[in-house]
Image (cartoon, rainbow, N blue to C red; front, side):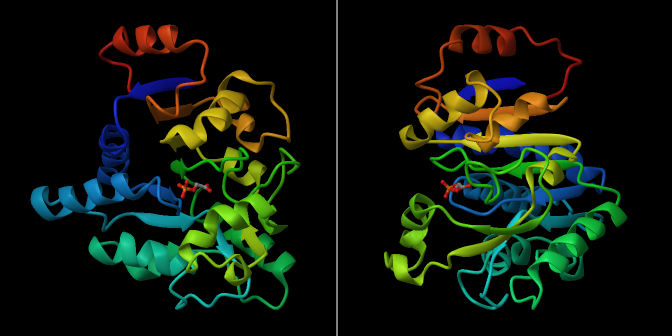
Length: 259
Ligand code: PGA
């Protein structure tokens, strides 16, 4: 796993945009994440699209997760979030942006169908990940099987509390169930790029990078991946022990070696 520490959240977004840009230029399949962390990246990619003509026309995108019970049109549905904050502002074809069906009568079947769609598209080339304060990725809460597939999950009360800010601060409005790509599904992406910013993520980042691989910290599954990158700002890196080495390794990276 490569750990890269940048000064600020904005710097994290800019470096992540450099990584994404090379995939976008190849028309790759992108795995998108919601939440506030990726916004700096999305804003930078929108800027490059507008100012430098970066085109997403050849790309396909798959979202990590979706609330159960919210239609795609609901302003807090993850499909709508991605549309409003990213995909409606670039030139990706709407028909090539996929998300789990939060309104499916049978969520189990919907999860299986979603994994099949990802496979039929040839798999995800680069999967963007945020991280929850409890170490979740996607909506795989602590205890999630490290080989899990896309399926229904019940949100942890902490995640409901964390996300209430998007629902007028009212926890009772946050859906309690979600459809999320599983840790096994996520692990099949060819490159995992986890972004973390802010002090609130410092414990989760430390557990992910330097703790044991354990379902209690779902993001620790990244330790099993052949190509996983964590980019965090100083605050999110503040509880890591090996920061000196991570900085040294990044500063001495051979020119030919991409992130
Ligand atoms: P955040 O969410 O980027 O809004 O902090 C991350 C997550 O819960 O996965």
